[in-house]
Length: 281
Image (cartoon, rainbow, N blue to C red):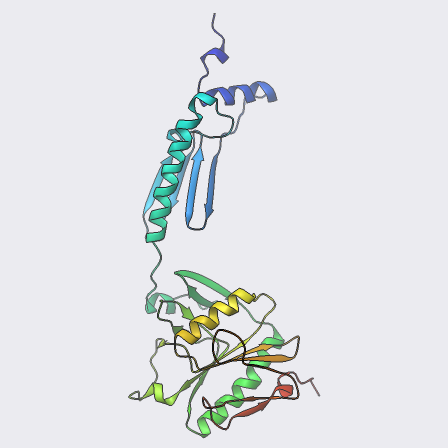
């Protein structure tokens, strides 16, 4: 008389052998879902996986058709791995094509939850909240820039809640921005939406979570979109890097130096030491 194990074949055999090993008849099957570098790999055994795409499409994948390349017997391993690779390439291609394209209306309709957002390569990036030191430095410098540029009628200064539309569709929000009047010609009032291109001057005050790669990528986009000058402020180290291109910093300013507006904001000067002043009250 044939045993139950004799009747178990293919994917069923590893499950039956595992039930025997653990001496328990409740056996969990599972699926593996791996997402890396825009490639989605799915394989499993007796499970269904639901894929929800950015464009609203929903796809159900029955992994019974794929097999599980863990513990499979040799005679079916090659076949199932072939199915796995084909599914992987198909989904990766679709994922690449389904990059989200954000409209201004969608981006502006995001909830007012106190967080800043940027759009980078179709993905919504939560920039989080800033600490007290970060905000204080921004407030000091923004007030000085706004007062000077308005008195001299040189342009407008905007805070970190303002996003700018890059050529590649990204939306970037520097901590402080100066937009020269020459680029606002023909406007009697500012749009309720976003200005095209990066500001003439961008200021980024680093937070603990910022990475070198992140700041470099921002600088590349800024200068590709008409930025002429960038100040990267390091609050804890008490220095400022001045960029005139994304390649490398032009100068390193310490507390004995001053930020100069150069030809972007002619005549503007602000002591670096004042950015890092101690509270005196």
